Amino acid sequence: MPLSGVPEHFAEAADRAEFCSVPRPGVELYRAQIVHHAFAPHSHEGYGLGVIEAGAERFRYCGSDYLAGPGALVTMNPDVLHTGAAAGDGGWRYRMIYLTPAVVGEISGEPAWWYRQPLAPASVVRSTRVGQLLQALWQCSDQLAADSLLALLVSALRPADSAPPPPEPPLRMTRVLDYMRTHLASTLRLEDLAALVDLSPFHFLRQFRACYHVTPQQMLMAQRLHLAKQLLAAGRPPAMVAAEVGLSDQAHLTRAFYQRYGTTPAAYRRQISRQTGRA
Image (cartoon, rainbow, N blue to C red; front, side, top):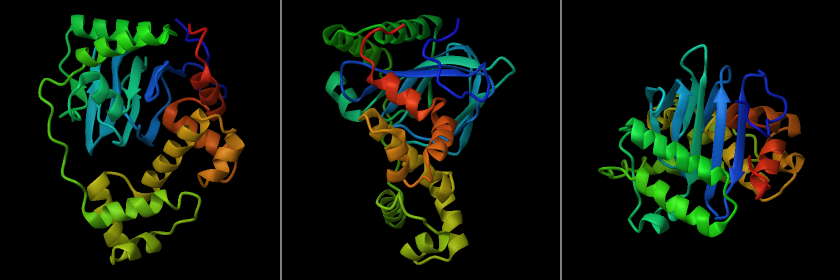
C-alpha cells in the first residue's frame, strides 16, 4: 500500500519514506518502503527502534554486517553510524521511532540503556505489538494518548540485559570529532586532522577507521547532515541550512540528505512540522 507524503525527487519510484513528529520533544517517527536506495553512513541522536514489516534489509553497524528479515526488531544505540540496503529484489518495508536518551530515561525511570546488538530477540507476537504501537503513534495527535503509547512501546522494547556502553574512544580521537563538529562549515584536510593528534595523515586515517568504522569524510558528512536535520526541524529553510553546515548549495544538501535519510530536506521539514492530519 503506497505511503502518503511521498518525498520529492526519488531516484526510484519504488522507494518511499516519510517522517513525522509526535506531541513530545525528542521523539520522531519514520516509515519507509525501500527497494533500490542504499543509505549512506549516518546516525541519529536517539535510539533507533523499530520493526521490519516485510522484506529484508542488510546493514552495517559498528563494523559488522547484519541481515534483518520480516518481523525483525531493530534496536540501535544513539549516535552510532550505520548503513542500509535491500537484501533482495523486493526491498523492505519498516517503521522506526527515534527517542533521545533523555526521553527513554524519563519514560523508563532507568539509567541509560545500551543494546548489545542492533537486532533484538523477536517473536510474532512481540513484533506485531511493536508495529501496532508505532502505527498508533503515527495516527496520534493527542499528547496524553501519545505518552501512553510511548510508555507501552518503551516497555515492549526494553533490553533483557542492558550492556554497559563500550569504552570511550581514545581522547585524541574524540578531540578530532569535537574539532570537526565546531568546523562543519570549513574545508577540512586530512593533514589538518592528523596534525591535531600528531600522526601522519594515513596513519591517522587507519586509526580513525579502526575506531569509528568509517572514514573522516564519512563522519564529517554524517555530522553535517545530523545538524542539518536539527535545523530543518526548527524551521530553517534548506538553502540557509546548506550554508550553515558547510555544503555548497541546496542541491548538494538535497543529494546528501536523501542519501542518508531517504527523503529530501524540504519534505522532511514539511513532514516533521505537521502535527495533525496523519495518514
